[in-house]
Length: 184
Image 1 (tube, one colour):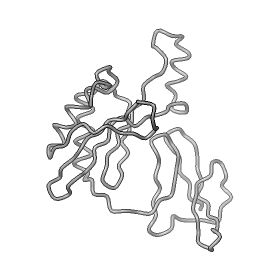
Image 2: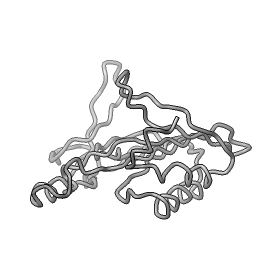
Image 3: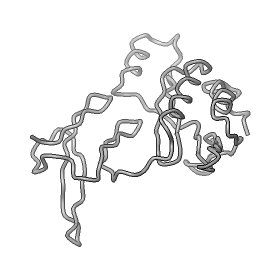
Image 4: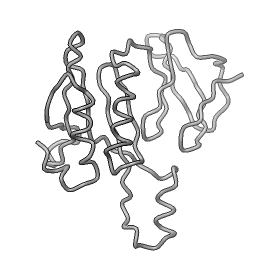
């Protein structure tokens, strides 16, 4: 039985392996190609799906973010954010909040709006990042994506606190709003 994974877009990926120049195994996922010699996920690895649907095999790592903290961000999004279509990307010590904003006004042709709402064509962008700064005190800092045009991956520091709920409640309400660009 091959290792198969279906992402949120409905694309099927199959786990493959190749040897590096040094003879070490290099794992990767390939779309629609079930011809593989792998029957299971290698020990110490896990499947990771990027918020935009790309699939990888990564080494397992100790996550410093708790399930309770992830739930805090989710509840804050449900209660305070106008954006309801979002994804969380939990890394070792950071929670990245990705949002999808329909690029077409809703008064456009309904067929275009519907087509762009299909998961096959959605693209999510990182907007906020909650990073654990001090593990003992559970001190978090929040940053927002910068759109100054200098670099793709620039972040603006906003604030830090040991109260993750207050941080999330304060900043997620600005997602999808013009006020988001006033935060700095």
